[in-house]
Image (cartoon, rainbow, N blue to C red; front, side, top):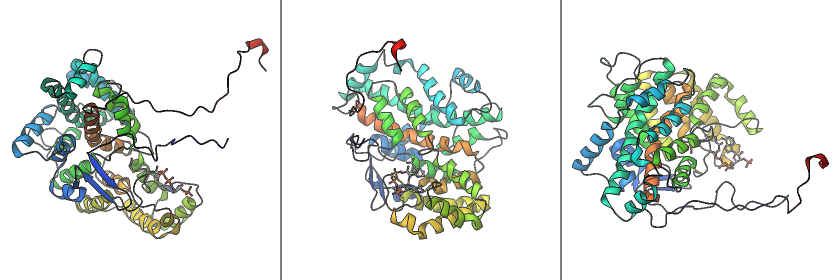
Length: 404
Ligand code: CMC
């Protein structure tokens, strides 16, 4: 009793050096490779920003064409992977299916098998071996390409409907919407406003430096396992309600509050610590999360297509009440990225338990950017944190008959 473990939740431990994403939580700044998130959200799009995150520079037009063609080409799922995805029960949680889907992909990419390639592949890539680097990048493009089709397969499986094959000629988010579509594959055209809104949401969720799931990717990857298995592990970390499950929790909470008139009572319960206010607070941001400001603008565009709802009015009343209240002000608790994204997903008609999947699809990019950075680092070693032992000191084994 009284002994403190050094840094149990890693609040003050920098496990890596990184040149991918910069966050200043005190001032509400987020930059991908030096570019302010606000500029990227306005001027770039998801696949271009994905290239930036992974390779460090914005692509030339020629490089972008090659990159997007390759990623979109990889959206196809092998027939046997489709078979795996259709083997789950109709009521399986989509994240459980997605985690399994990523792990299954490893079985279909024998060249990534660590027992065959592992150490040599990555250490050769780190030494600049062109073939090894190309092999690594192929797995990256495969994973980014297959994320939306795997995700759509989890959705279609829930509906008991056959999977849509990815189309040609659509954007990344358009391809995803097409694969999700419940109508005929041949009639569906994504709504341009919703397609762009989803693309911006993807861009905003693509990376957020050493969060729980990204740390998982680098940790698991440090054993030199294949990236499919490491992505499956990261996806499992994202499944948790304090991480990727938060947008779902926000909407469940809003349904539970059931109207702006009940907000004051709910706020009092939070202040008495009987409940947590989902979508508020952040380990890093002690001011407004810059993504939540952009998401509010995206929300207005989406609502102009889908209309407004009681849920949205409840959300606005909740945000206003919380931001004025001393409990939240004194603890620097502000709306985070999940507060409005959940309402957008709800207005777009996504099922509640599909929201973490909508977070996982773009975050695959961040996981892979950090994985690639770590694998190519000359200081790459297996992660092995220390512990402080606080258990019993040495004692002798007691036979079962003599135990009390
Ligand atoms: N509602 C009510 N009180 C809160 C909340 C909240 N959402 N978040 C923090 N607090 C309180 C906490 O109880 C503590 O109070 P006290 O000082 O009286 O003990 C104080 O604020 C400080 O909290 P903290 O220890 O700095 O919080 P943390 O860094 O350990 O946790 C968090 C961060 C995001 C897990 C937490 O704020 C939370 O549970 N938020 C709700 C879930 C959520 O929205 N998660 C998504 C985060 S953003 C996306 C992502 O990264 O995945």
